[in-house]
Image (cartoon, rainbow, N blue to C red; front, top):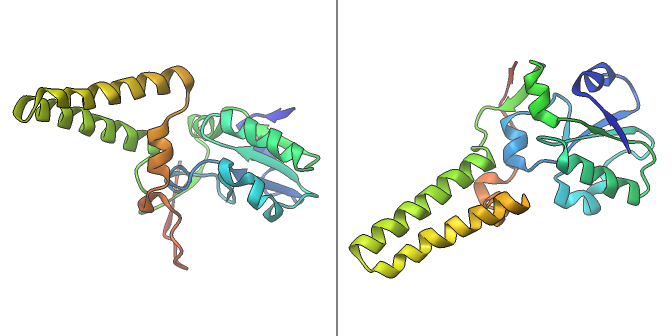
Length: 182
């Protein structure tokens, strides 16, 4: 499978016959992206692949490179000939101090939302176990088990659920306020 660095991608941007596809969720994309990247979340690749020009070299990017490697495999199975995974993803892009754009009213990153929600659930479980009934401590234990599972498997059900919340969906208004950052 073909890969490139973020510096290699930067050299290719602006050339004809390339497409840059960001396979993260909307909240991540809104929080920062390479200018010109088209959002096609990984879980929508199969149903939206016709939006991507099959004749172009397709660069796929995510936060770290893991989801984009999966997107690369899926696009190959869908008949794309030249798909390049961007190693290190958007995190590496930012480390290299390359310019990016973001929506001014972007939702929190999913990781931050998960940490906030998990912390709130644990705190609620502990307080309810103190003031209402001791069995509410099970809520804190359940969240702890879920976080342990997420860390061990790199699959987080809470993140998947939060990604489907209305505030994490792309706004359908015609206007998007975008700012650029380094």
